[in-house]
Length: 222
Image (cartoon, rainbow, N blue to C red; front, side):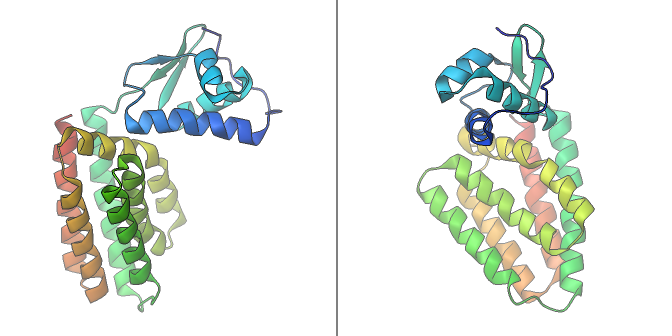
């Protein structure tokens, strides 16, 4: 395998780097690339049909996102999500999302919020029905992100976005192994959206807390 050095300023096509990034990211999310697997620049370059340079740039981005660890002359190692990390991530999310829901429900009603949430929920139902676990998990994250974004706290939103791919990896893994039923996730999401529509902050916060606590338990069983 090739040496994976720190990249110089990019001179490659953004589309080539993006293609390599999305190829590896998709494999990480759908389980094609397993925890502990060692990836090579050459193999990914061949699979995507690009040179090694954009693959190296993709690896560096995925390392920065906490999904890969780069090893000189060996390759890129797929990092697992540890049980401790899962517990801490769900605990942090519960705090952030509870604060976001209380913030938005203490303000005058935004007429676009609930229709936007229901549109994402409908999208999740459609993607689940199509059997696309990765896209369904992405819709799951988009729904939670929507009420965090609506609180208009840029610091908390950046924090939430930093957890993106590890959240989705855990959601896909839980659905794939049967630790949580997608139908149950969607029912819980619908109940939270109903509470937001009723403008019942206590109920919305309680439901989100229960939803994330159940997901935390399911993730710990992986």
